Image 1 (spheres, rainbow, N blue to C red):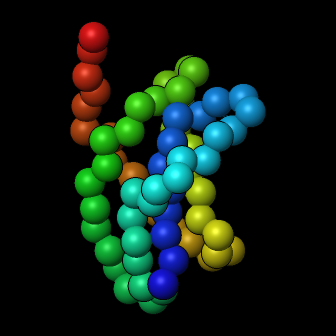
Image 2: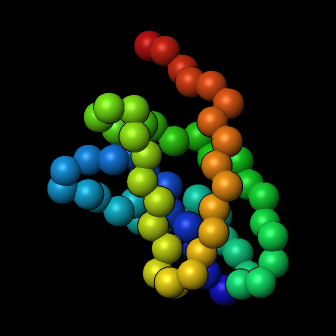
Length: 64
């Protein structure tokens, strides 16, 4: 089992303590994540495994 962490892109990068998606290698998994974006409208993705393929759809955003 592995996991994906989604977080705002910042310098230096700060990994969140929790995962956004837990998955089993070799299976397609779907999930919804509401994530704050970083400077320049960027998000970062982290996994501790080497070969991970992601498809990301951005559906909208919130304003203050």
